[in-house]
Amino acid sequence: MSQTFTPSEIPAGPPPGAEREPETPKSIYLVSYPKVVFLYPTFVAALLAGIYALIAQDPDRKDMQIVSALFVAVFTINIIVFAFDFPRTTSLTLFFCVTAFILGALLLFRLNDQILPWLYTLSNAYKPSANATFYFSIAGALAIVYVAVLINVQFDYWEITPNELLHHHGVLSNLERFSAPNLKIDKEINDVFEYLLLRSGRLILHPSDERRAIVLENVLGINRKEAILTKMLGALQVQLRPAPPA
Image (cartoon, rainbow, N blue to C red; front, top):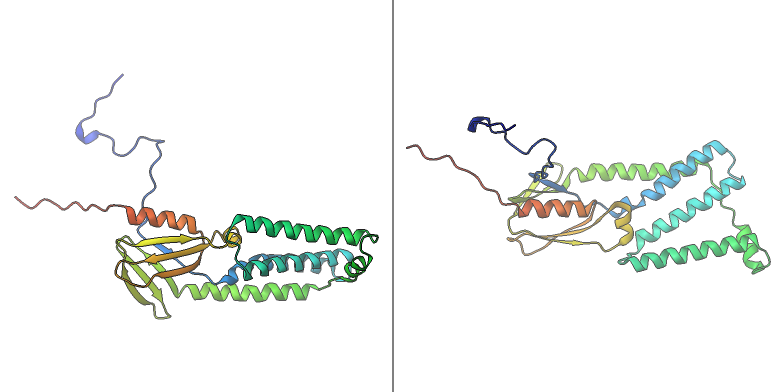
C-alpha cells in the first residue's frame, strides 16, 4: 500500500536507522606536551609496587625483591624510550629481542650455578630492596609534575578553525592569529615507542602567510587529529544568502 505526501509533509533527513556522516567540527585544539608524559609506565609501576610493599611490610622478603627488580626493569626500559628514538618497527623489534635475551640469560644464570659461576654469584648478590615510602615518593613526584604539565598546557595551546589558526599562550591569554586557508600539514611519527605509549607524533603546520613552520611536538592521538584536520580544512563552506527583496 503506497502513501502520498504533500510537499510540506515530505519527511526531512535520512530514514530511521540510516547512518549519518559525522559532522565536520568547527574547531580542534592541539597541545604540544613535554616528553615527561612518556614516563607514565614508571608512575604506574611505582604506584603498584608501593601498594604491594605496603601490604607486604617487609622489604627484604624474596617476593619484594622480585617486585623491586621488576620496577627497576620498567624504569630502565622507560628511560631508554625517553632517551632514544626508535624510528622503525624493526628497531623496536630488535630492542625487545635483545631485552628478552638479556633477561632470559640472567634468569638462566641465576637458576644454574654451573654456567658461568662468577655471573651466578653476581646475580645472586643483586637483591634490590625498597619500602613503600620510596615507591610512593617516586609516584608522588611524577604526579606533581603531571599536574604542573596539565596546568601549563591550559596557557599554551593551538586552536584551528576552517578560517584561522590561533595560538593561545600566556596567563593573560595572549593570542596570535594566522590564516588557515591553504594550510599545509605534515605528520611525522619519529618514535614507534612513543606512538605505542600515547599515539603521539609531530605535527608541522605551514600557514600560507608565514615563512616559518610551526612545529608541535608530542601531539597525543595524532592520527585522529590529523584526520579531523584534513576533513575540516578540506570541507567547502557554502553560505546561502537570502534573495533581495523584489
